[in-house]
Image: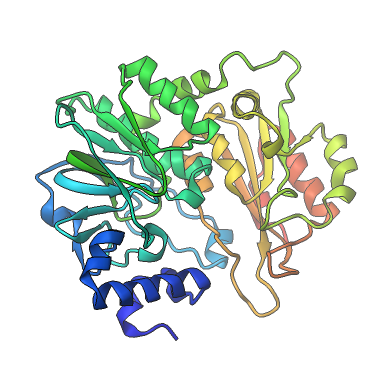
Length: 404
């Protein structure tokens, strides 16, 4: 059991090696304040809005469509109304740490939601300190290290809110960017886009053991915190331009138009009988892709060219952001296991993204979860029905209700 003192600080109350390390570090920092200062490990929080000196509110689009029944079966319940507001806060004289972009003011952790996950944002370690220039504000694009290469989180949590802010006409000055020291290829390409489109070339990189004092910091906080797929129309209007830039000249005349995205290089939600399904995929003209084996430019180019995309739920579907309106998107989830337990990390973000971009979207439950990593199988008849719907015109609404 996690003590009441930490109940709201540990994601879903999971007692893991990471949470135990945080608890022990926190207790040491409370006993020895010198360690707290040396480690930059706050022991008390303050809501970020309470200390901000400025707030620019950028509302997202509002989605009226009902959530598909499959998502509700998996225990996913959207907020009502389905809309959020990105708040771009201005913060004066704060410290930002290099592990996860944690923001600290006057020794207090600036929390962005009521149940802030302290475990993922803080590391007890000495930091190499540096001071940033006061000539410009700095936009906080620091991501938690484990999520650095995650396309959906980088796009929706960081880049699109920044684009909305820059397009809003309310950015008084061109900001510098505060980023992780070892960016992913997708981060590199999006930073290059910001430089080309907006002339933002001042970038400060922080390593995991670095920290910086920042005279003026800009930080995005969505309210409510989820679903993160919701974005401002100002940012959504730039998706095609951003996708064209990231893809560069990597699109080819013979690129496949029907894509099946494999997760058999991933830890979670592998399709256990995928090899047996290959003849069916080929019969319907679908090409299997393992995205992790492709450069980011090719990944984006393939989705920009696609007419139909079929995939189990996973981060690779974030690329539907680049697909043309009207693209057919078919998403599989494993069904609940024998004990009725929900799928790990399930979300309705890709349904939501399809609503925003204008895709022809359907979702279905495949076979039940068969192992601890949510591995599952897809029946051949079910896959044939889904592929037929993705290849056909017009789309049949009966797919969503297909039996598992």
